[in-house]
Image (cartoon, rainbow, N blue to C red):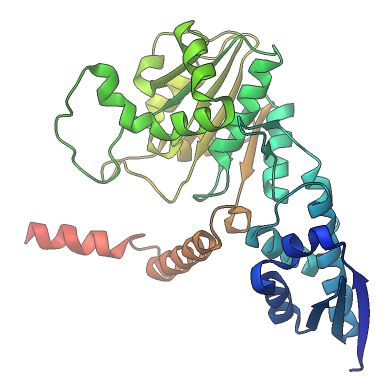
Length: 340
């Protein structure tokens, strides 16, 4: 296989952003595509096999275009651009970047970063009810919150309702001090964090006092009819089938619902059935309900999170074995020890 070289011009103002600190992004591209990249005096020289150079030029060109649009290039951008280069969808990373949902209180644009996230956002725009299912770090809740806040600002809905089951994540916290609000706030903290980041604490407080934004446990939804509202149910894997049915039948006219959950992180008592699992089976053929499945390739947190998700998926697949077995064998062993 013949080795060739090519040269790309790099505008000086984008060189550090695209190449990374100490050229870390170039080194990542070199290792993945087996090419040599040398950045010097506003030019990038790429040396290697023709096919690898074509991919490297495409990846670097996409990163450079993202930088010109004002994006701060991250390791996740580089990893995803490399992954797309092997699937012949490398140009789509620029199409994804165009879809700005809203901006945070600091002016940072909120937008999908992967094809899976783009499909999720598109489904939210088209469907009345959308289930966003996937592992931690795929942006399920954050993107849903951004869509809700933007719809509220645009006057498409009159209020936002955010809810999640108040269930302990494998721990017994005992009695919590304070009034009812103080007791439930720790369970709802992730929703508050996203609200403050996108909307700002003062704007949230102002709208919350007027009853236009409500953050509440799922139990508070019973008996209500929610018209003209954007409703988000987070951590839906921790609902029971009865709770899920109760929640979905609260929907009134002019409302939109997003249900997010991770089917691999259930905190329900042993032997309990997840309302999310049941809903996926029961509602999969219902018109105007969308199901979006995000994977570890859509993880947009620290790159290590993606590796952790992949490692757990592989471990659980091995543990289950051909006959099924226990998904978490260590939990089963601890339970057996207690019984003995």
